[in-house]
Structures are given as C-alpha cells and as structure tokens.
Image (cartoon, rainbow, N blue to C red; front, side, top):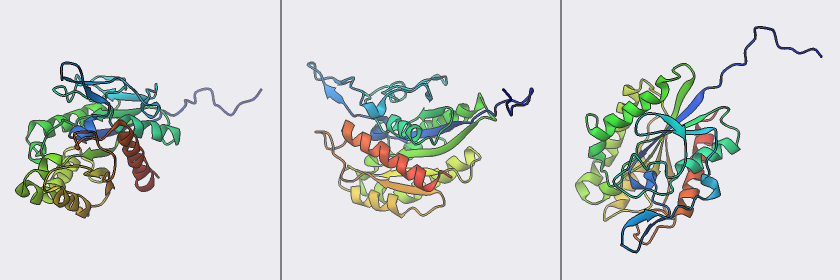
Length: 256
C-alpha cells in the first residue's frame, strides 16, 4: 500500500501552549475549601469532572519541573493557604474539548492569596517570581513552546481602601506593560477577571478593570457568580463557570 510519507519526512512537532495563571486567592482556587473539626481550613478533595486531569495538561511546579496537572493547581505556590478548585483546570479542559490545543497544554500557576497590586510591582518578589516562572516554562523547549496568554484574577485586596482602588487602573496597566516587556512578548494576550467580591471600594476597582483599553487586553466579569459563606471566594461551581468564561474569551478574541 502506497503512502505519501517520504522516507526522511518527520511529523512536525506541535508547540506546547502555555498559559500563566496569576493574581490572588480566587485564581489560586478556594473551591471546596472547608473547615475541619479543628477549625482548620482544608480542601474537601472533590474534583469536578470539568477539572479532571488529562495526560495533555501539565503544570509547572514550584521547583520549575513540568508534571501532570491536578487540582489543586496552586498547592505548592500559594502554600501558606488551603488551596482547592480554581478556574485553571476547567479552562484547560475546555480548550482540549474544543480541539484548540494539539499536543500539550502547560499551566504556570503563580497566584498567591491576599496579595495587593503593589506586591505585583516590578522588582517585588511576586512579580519577579512570575516572570521567572514564565521564562522557565519555555526554556526546556524554546522552539516548541509558546506562552499564549496570562489569566489574571486579582483586586480584592485593593478594594479595601480608597487610595489603592484609585490607583488600580494605572498599576494594572503598568504591570501589563512590564510583563510584556520582560517576556519580550509585546502583544501577549491578557485576560483579566473583574471582581466578584471585595470590600468598600469594589466598584471602584471593577470600574478600573473594565476601563483598561490596551491592545489584546480583555475583561471577563465574575460579578454574580456564587460565593462561599465568607462572601469572598468563589464556590467550586462558580470556579467551573469562570473557567468556561475564560476559555470562551480566549477562543473568541485570541484563537485564530
């Protein structure tokens, strides 16, 4: 039987598509986090079908090693808190189901709960660690890996006082500029999430998030998603909904 494959012809390698997950606790994931009999927070261990593991989905560990991705994605990144279900695995699975990714999809968790925008400024530990992890994610396979987008969910800590809320837009625009410059990706897509919860100045932060008008920057609104009893963190079901929202936003705006 004849084939069209030449003797020395090789199947072209597919690029590992990489997504940076950053921000604070709702990106790190608190879905399914409960208090045990000793009043300590822990994850209930329930993985919804939408967050299941898949051989094609990898995560970059805290030690900069690629490994199979499983919930909770941020267990060794937001290590001082109890991490549960977040939007990352749902997002990744949604892209796989839509056959957007051929080959491997790499997730780079960077979110840390309770952090304010000033802690994500260039030169600060969180920012520099995010950039380092992003660079490491493509180092192993430099010609066959590509950072496709940053998913950003942060701002609850900046809604606590008016000064931080008022500075949010400028600070977020600066972060976007710095990340793109430091990764040498001037058109890097940024998908930010408008807050679902927050303190006195939540609306001021939300207005700032939705007002950012930069190329390849879009905003997904989490307002209205169900919150846990603390009125701060998204439930597991809400994280599933958010993951799908992020996937749809990426597919609509950035997938050719």
